[in-house]
Length: 226
Image (cartoon, rainbow, N blue to C red; front, side, top):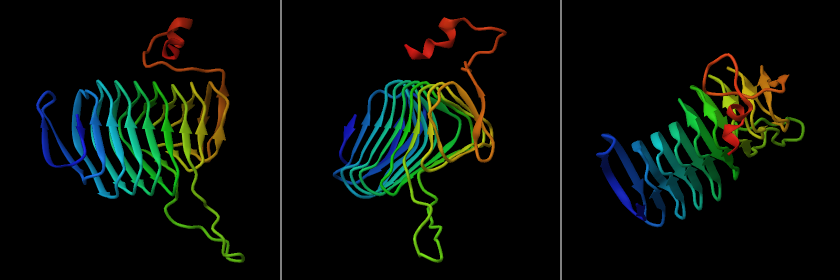
């Protein structure tokens, strides 16, 4: 379904969910075959914005845009539950194929982008922010200290409950972020556990799996790479 303008209440009968879509003319919403849509998608201000929900995906939350030429993509076969707020121009938020989350708040602002890879698993009460939303200022120089920066989360990353992924963070593929961690820097080493406030590497040489049993084969541990 490709729409340049729609304002109203949509009933997605196949999922028995209610979905509110409000997009002024000049914006585009594309449903590539979502399994269910619940919540709302709204462009409060701006044109040239594109929002895409992938095939087989269940979306339960909100997307709110204030700005122009922004892109939000929820990939195929995802389960997304949370809220995305995009304020500014020319930014991108992506949530990769086969990824899931219980509840997440994503704030993308100040010309930055947020990339979440494929096969990720995000728990509940997680915040991902490209900006602090206010300025920390050096009193002597008058210069702002806490500039905004983009965020990149690699493929197959598990983020524990209550974690905060702050501006400028990078998390490499096949890693784990511990519960309540505060991530505010770049971690480019794969296969690690990152935990603490501020977060640091606490274990190396690991992977993770959604299943629970005593041991896993190499094929099982690397199935997500296919």
